[in-house]
Amino acid sequence: MAQLSDDCFAFGGPMMSVDDAVGIITSRVTAVAAIETVALAEADGRILARDVAAPLSLPPFTNSAVDGYAVQSQDLPHEQEQAFAVSGRVQAGMSGQAARRGHAVRIFTGAPMPEGTDTVFMQEDVRLEESGKVVLPAGLKAGANVRPAGEDVPKGHVALRAGQRLRPQDIALAAAFGLTGLDVIRRIRVAVFSTGDELASPGTERAAAQLFDSNRFMLIAMLKRLGCEVSDLGILRDEREPLANALKQVAGAHDLILTTGGVSTGEEDHVKAGVESVGSLVLWRMAIKPGRPVAMGIIAGTPFIGLPGSPVASFVTFVHVVRPTVLALSGAGPAPLVPIPVRAAFSYRKKPGRREYVRVTLRQADDGTMEAIKFPREGAGLLSSLVDTDGLVELGETLTRVEPGERVGFFGYANLL
Ligand code: AMP
Ligand code: MG
Image 1 (cartoon, rainbow, N blue to C red):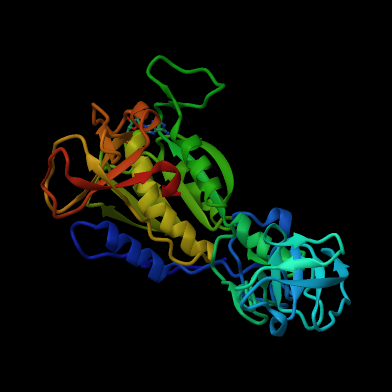
Image 2 (cartoon, rainbow, N blue to C red; image 1 turned 135 degrees about the vertical axis):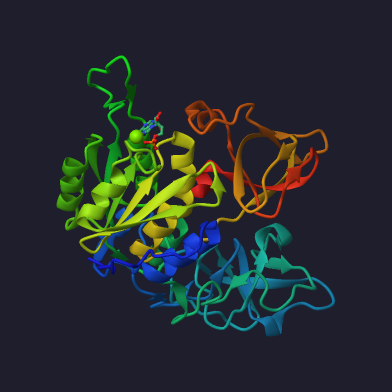
């Protein structure tokens, strides 16, 4: 377990910008050290623990890129077509063929080039004579239609890098090298709690003044998309001592503790006092909307993050605080979020000095560009505003207004995790 010091999230300024937050997290949170080997079929989404150098060249042998006729380049017809005797035939998977000077060899895609040959005529470009000879046209370049050994990946090349999240194509490359498994960093373990007397778990009785806890299920799903192993620990009531005890109890067995709710500064917000009684805590006033404060703490060496309770604030702060923390703990290399340029189909006023996220739906405009249509309402408690939109438009700290037709940066929900 990566032990963090109690002052690890200390911060002097009045407001925490998104960039400062990411900077503090990535410089102070270290990756878990444990490595495990997983079979290729289980490797998707895992974080690679070590570089992988090619143990063999790809392709491993020089082979034909087409079905056709292989010849030696010294024999290539230059001025006019020329008939060649066909001696030999080599299919994919066969080897050991050699070619005679002045002869062509029948060859198929993927078959190794017969010894001495270096050029292949596509079967579509040749003519067969009744004599059995093949007539090859003039003008083909030496080396045409051949895939040289190592043209894809030369032996020894570092083809996969430690810290990368494995994708299907990365796993295919490992298989092409003949590997059966990959060394990955073990999944990080995250404990998730909701907090608040107003919450009821789906499947339990809901009192008249309660709402069903939805954030916990959103956060669990987001964490799983980031490859975490999640402990769903239910709802903590607004009572300092039981809350503190529950947090302390899970600290040792988890790499991160995540809560939602109870971190604003109201007198019924007990998370702050609860964490302080068993560890340390700082409130980051995020310069972000929707956002509000995010509580950052350390409990027995384990990082703690307390997100706001409003669903949209919880979602947005997850992306900017929890995601980088999870990536750092997971040993994943930096994965900056890259916006896609779209045109705003709305006007908007904002305060300078903070970053705002506008929930939008995308539509293709008549001129083919993508337009972002703003969700009509703005409340941070509107879960439907996340459900009925495609993603978030980011309005940077220095902006104060957006007018229709202006270019803005868009993040699809799937790309935020
Ligand atoms: P809080 O941050 O505790 O002040 O919560 C702010 C508001 O967010 C509450 O009044 C609830 O309406 C809502 N809320 C808090 N926790 C959750 C949750 N787990 N699921 C859904 N909504 C929540
Ligand atoms: Mg609350």
